[in-house]
Length: 232
Image (cartoon, rainbow, N blue to C red; front, side, top):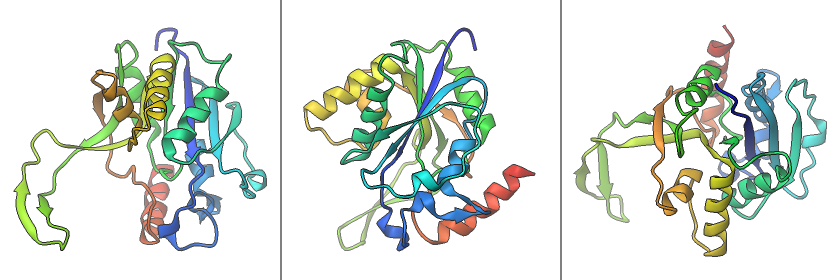
């Protein structure tokens, strides 16, 4: 992958209220490891220069993790919103990452991402001027509803994608994009949206649908099945 350097930023400061658990969802256990441990292990390969994990201020679980990774791990303070945490992760890389280095931002609650998909993202975008993200084309029928869940029309799924993570952009460009949305108080839902607001066009790289984000209790069983399959 040429002479590119790659860093990973994982925002892990959320509390996961929809999981109805006694601890943040990233610390729930699947196959005798926390979700966060599984996620970190997906990025433990030589091309990764380092991983930054953004943690909540009063996180009391991180120090209890028994991590055995070859990639250097750094921590950052989590922010009010996900994109604040990502920006804090970029600040932690100041002096380490160069403006043209790549940064892969990945959700802590996506432990099932395949390393083959991560490598495909890195390889196919290695010389791309902007960067992009993993995604899958929308295959289901989409409906628009009112506030009372009454169907108003069917939405065309042509050219629609589900956005996944990692999302990969140059360090300097992503820093500039996130700094701008934070200064302008513009809420965003993912890193690609910040890049779009600068007038750039990220590219989708198709991944696998088993790269699920754990948000509800029933997702744990599904993640366990996917992780078992990945390990085979």
